[in-house]
Structures are given as C-alpha cells and as structure tokens.
Amino acid sequence: MKVGVIGAGTMGSGIAQVAAQAGHVCFLYDSRSDAVDRASDALKAMIHKLVEKGKFTAEEGAGIIGRVKPAHDLKDLSGCGLVIEAIIEDLQVKRKLFAELEPLLSADGILATNTSSLSVTAIGAACTKPERVVGLHFFNPAPLLPLVEVVPGLATSAENRERSAALMTAWGKTPVVCKDTPGFIVNRVARPFYGESIRIYEEGIADMPTIDHAMKSVGGFKMGPFELMDLIGNDINFTVTRTVWESFFYDPRYKPSFTQQRQVEAGWLGRKTRRGYYAYDEKGQMVAGQPTTSNQQLLEGICWRVLVMLINEAADALHFGIASREDIDLAMTKGVNYPKGLLRWADEMGLGKCLSTLEGLQAEYGEDRYRPSPLLRRMVREGRAFY
Image (cartoon, rainbow, N blue to C red; front, side, top):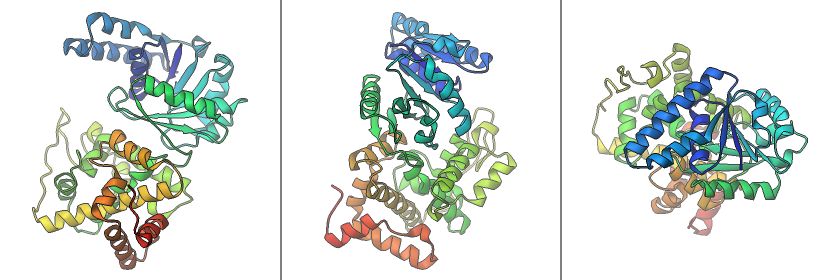
C-alpha cells in the first residue's frame, strides 16, 4: 500500500520513517519544499547511524531510505491507501487540507490525522465520506515510542477503525482505541502531572528541582514534570493544556497556570531556547537544578498529591468510557513511560486512600479541581478494585 505523510517536521518525518520501515513506499509532502529536503537528509543520517549500530543491515537501511520519496505536490499522493497529516494544530487548516485530499485517495483509502487535541469528528466533517477519517495519534519520537491512539470520529466506520488499529499493529506499534474527546487518553490523563506540580510550586511548598526529584525518586518517573515540560516546550505544553481546558468548557480540573503562561510570554520555552524552568548550555544540558531538601516526608507528600490527581483522572476517563481499563493503563506506560498503569497503581495504593486524599484536598481548597471521580466513590463504597 502506498502511504502519504503531510508535514515534514519532527513528527511527520518520524511517521514516514515508521511507514518505510514497515515496507511501504511513503510520499512525504510539506508546503515548504525545503522542509522535505531537510527531513530527507535527517532521515538518511538517522538510518546510517542505525546501520552502524547494527539495528539494520546496509541493504535494509538503503531500502528504508529509498522508500521515503519527496512529494512536491499534493497530487503526488494520488492513489494512496492511507494519508496521515501531521501539520499545525489548527482546525480550519486541517479541514481545508482533508477536503483537498479526499478526491486523491484510493476508493477505500483512509485519511488520518495526527492531532493531539482537536476533534477528529470536526476534521472529518469537511469530507464527503467522513466514515474514512480517523485519528492516529503518534507520540514523539514516532520511531521509538510504541503507542498510537486510534481515535474514531463520530462518523468513522467500525471497519476503518479496525483496519487502522490492525495496520498500527502490523507497523510494530501498540494501538489503543479511545473516544473522540479532548486530549484522548494521554493528553487528558497526564494534565495533573504538569498542572498539580506547578500548583505545588506556586503555593511555595517546594521549588521546581525538589518537585522533579520527588516524582523521580519516590514515584519512579523517568523525568520530573518541569524537566519534561522543558523538553516538550512550554509553548506546546501550555497550548495543549489550554486547548483541553477550553474543549472541556472550562472545567477547573484542566485550568492552565499563570506560571507557565509567563514562561511562554518571556520566550523561556525550554531546551530549544536554552531557558525554561531551568537553564541549559549549548549542548542542551541542564546548567543547574539540584533539589534543596532531602526531607523524605515532604518528597512523599509531593509525589502522592500529584499521583492521586493522575489516578483520579484515569478513573474519570474509565467512568466516561473514553477507553478500556487495559488501554488506559497501556497508554500511560507506552505513551509517556509512566512506571505503572495508573489504575493498577490505584489498586496497590488502596482506593480508600485515594478517595480520602481527594476529599481532603477538596475540603481544604473548596475547588472543583479536586472533585473525586464518581467511579472512585462507587468502587470504594462497594469494596471493589480496578483489577
């Protein structure tokens, strides 16, 4: 099957590499022709490194490079069985693109969007056959991270949902199917990792290096929230948070923070600008950032407050049928490298402890931000566990 990828940035070129590694001829298009050239050069350099490391033979590497072909016009994508767009997160731009692409696809071709926060249903509504539009949300870097969120829109056919999930499995990915709701699984459930950590900092409970240290040393997370926001980019992270908040009709649970907004306004976007929550040298290494305390009780308290908010978000996602129990846990471990699935983690910590902590926070702050999930309340009342 011929595959098309639109958008030659980091995500689009990564998806093209994944498709080529799976044996597909993949046409890579970008409205900026120089972006395609840069992506092609970067792909060649990456594959040559992988050949040197023994990940591919020289013949396999040459095959992958040869299967990624530059497209200089959208018409070069004619006859594709699958086209994946990975362009700017702008609904109107994506809708216009899909309307232009639809006549070019094969009769049973699938149009996929890599959107992380926009409505797949709204994008698909621009097409005469919205049943063949689906969300395929890859995670960065696409060649390395196994998770793909498969998101059917309201009009997506069951056949195309299943075909998309099966194709991702054939590409060596781990697909999880989720409802077309803001943030899908990962970007919805992960919001407290950033938001509650910033809140703890804003309250003066601990500084940023101490909060990062708590999440790594106590929780076993690979990176602390402030380190991770600097890696992602504060502009990107803040935009996703704001988009999810607005899409949930301003639910206070997802409310963005002034701290991160000021970072964006200052141009302190993280590693890419050498200044974010931390300072970085020209090699992207953090200049400073040591925790100011080793008080174990404080570190455990910080980690538990963030973790219980993550657990509550995962429970609410299950409550509203966003995805299955297994897929919610799989998404967080495979998509953002959490040390455990949150629902299984909740069972280990005790659902009663989770509920009492949330009730305590809600009573203390008087904010709907801390409202416990109805599912969590019901399960504690009935003495049940997630597993």
